[in-house]
Image (tube, rainbow, N blue to C red; front, top):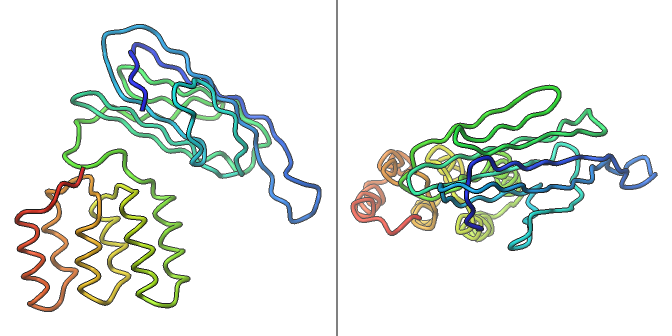
Length: 226
């Protein structure tokens, strides 16, 4: 992620409606242009932003992409001691929307004619960052529920976990969908977690004494979860 200097970092995005097709079942979408404006300051940070998963090219300050209605804007930033993260869906009912995303010493502010959303700087968490959005978690849970065999669900989940960063409650929801306790433990060991100190609370996922003991031994010296 690019390291930049921060005093007032402004991302201005203007959305212009486009139509994906003329057929009745075609999906409406919006065409998005984003521009970063940076100002000099002594506060160094890492910063990333995405439109429905689209990642700006390295070093670029502009992103053109087409996103579906109710797609998601995600943004996060981190200093040596603090972090901030924001996620917001595009309104379903608007054909066009102009808004500004501002990152300053107060945090993120997402301003539109209808509302202003704010995310404040927080102390740097002990595990991974940024946190996977609830939207992405729900999509994965829905995909797993449509997969009939637990072995296939496990293969899908373990690959997904390696690329995502979950809270303890989110990890519990995912692992709870499995019956085999060996697979449950493997999923926990393969996960990246925002607060590893909360791992002991997941002991209740196991019912047999054997796996409760194996889990307890692992929690005593878990691998790096960053």
